[in-house]
Length: 138
Image 1 (cartoon, helix red, strand yellow):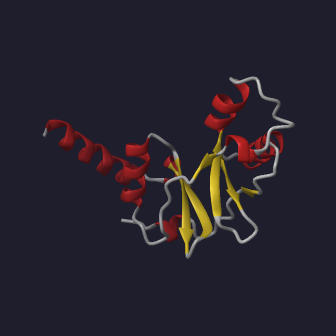
Image 2: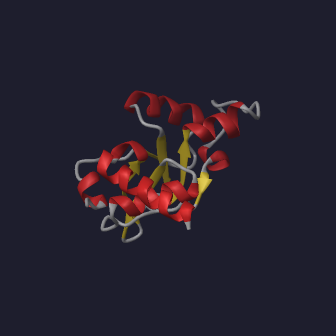
């Protein structure tokens, strides 16, 4: 079973300051073809995560101006995280139980990557499905 360090090995996560506008972050997410951006401070400590869901639910649906709204106003603060030594199945469990699709990977208090539900292979997702089925029958 793979751990997070294997999945994020060559990754440069998309990161922004909390003072970045939603419009700028969305443009970066589109350009990089990713569904989430991490919001960090000057020391690369995680402050929050901004996802496509946040853009729809906290900006568009509320009629906010993406060019004027800052990430600090609409990001998900203090998201659940994983360590690079965490396993793929642990990340999938965390996403499944929390109802989200992205998990920041943090080491020594600093962002080192991000994993998405789509990063995992069939064997890993099949194991989660099997575990979920067992719990539902108990």
